[in-house]
Each structure stands twice: as structure tokens, then as C-alpha cells.
Image (cartoon, rainbow, N blue to C red; front, top):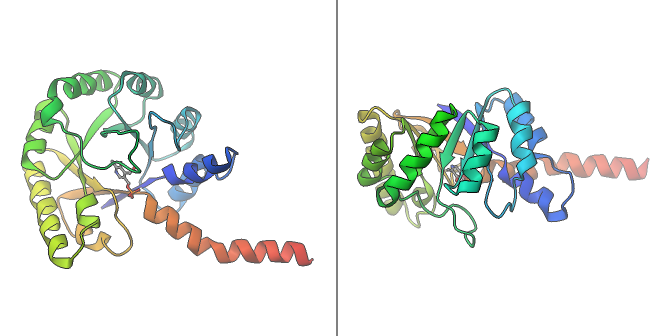
Length: 237
Ligand code: PXP
């Protein structure tokens, strides 16, 4: 199973001071060195973390694949066509949400999504749709002309009990199976962490997981000891 690492929250920290550090492009190179199979970044319409220049720098700097998460807005589609990432993952976007809350309603917006898929494919960009694990959405994704989907694991990750989690896991399992049956490549992500990833990683039909927040959180806690030691040494020397 491949791992795509989302570097959005490295940029979130940088934007807190509007400075240069930490640099999501440098972080992406470290992720690649550590074994990441692709790098994911979401250019949000409100530019709250990743900026336009990051997207251009990621495209020319990384050695693996660049997966650009994006809404279907005309401005963002234009940028994607200029940057030409290896893959664009179409996601729904609401200004006030803290993170992508649900999957794209492909069934309810088929014409618009089909049009955007067509534009991106003309620029030789592979297109994936981030959808809830539902048969209706997988069918619609197929109609929209994509050959890959990413199943939203947010409900599974946020389940309040083991019983509820098992139900959501079964939905993902069945959707992954159904997606493969339709001839599509199946990816998954959102809210996955060092504990809940095990259940999803066991689903053979899923070929790639895209994970961001938990990895950036872990990096901060795992790296804090070194950071403090280095500073302490500098000021006592
Ligand atoms: N996949 C998609 C389509 C997403 O929108 C996100 C969040 O940006 C992720 C994966 C990663 O989610 P998380 O940061 O919770 O690991």
C-alpha cells in the first residue's frame, strides 16, 4: 500500500507568522526521503495554508508524485492546468469548515464535475474524486469519467464507539470492493492516525492512503526533544 503525505499543516504553522518557516516544500523532500510515495497539498480558495507559490515549487522540486487537492472553482482549475500536477483530487470546499467535512457530491453535481474532469484530463492530469463510501457516489464517479476515487475515512476516524467504527469500516470495505469491480483505482484518507490506520490498511482493494494531520502532529512531538536540546546547548555554550 502506498502512502501519500499531506503537507498542508506544515504551511499552517508557517502562515501563523507569515514567515518562511517551516517550509512545506522542504518538508515534502524529507517525507520523500522517509519513504512517502507521493506528496499531497490542498490549495484552498481562502489560501489558509498552502499558497500558489508552494504549489509551483512542489511541482518542480519533488521526485515522487504530486497530488493537488482542489475545489472545482474556475480560478483553481486554471491554476491546476498551469501547474499540471500528476494528479488532481477534487474535493468539496466550504469557507468556514476546519477541514474537508464530507465527500464531493458527484451524484448531485455530475455535469459540473464531468466538465472539470474533462478540462483537467486534456492537460494530462490524472483525476481522482474524494467521495463518501457510498454506491451512489461511486456510480456517479464512474459516469464522471474518472478512473480513480479516494474514499473519505472521516466518519470511520471520528466514530464514537468500536461498534460504530466497525460499521463505518464495513462501508469503506464494501465501497472499495465495489470501486475495484467498476474498474477504478481506490485510495482512502482523512483523519487517519497511528491507531486507526490499521483497520483501513488491511483492505486489499485500497492501494494508497493519504495522511497529513496526524503525521505533522507526530513530527512535532517526536522532534521536540531534539529541538529543545539544540537550543539549550546553544545558549549555555
Ligand atoms: N485526503 C483528502 C482528500 C483530504 O482532503 C485530506 C485533508 O486535507 C486528507 C486526505 C488528509 O487528511 P488528514 O490531514 O486528516 O490526514
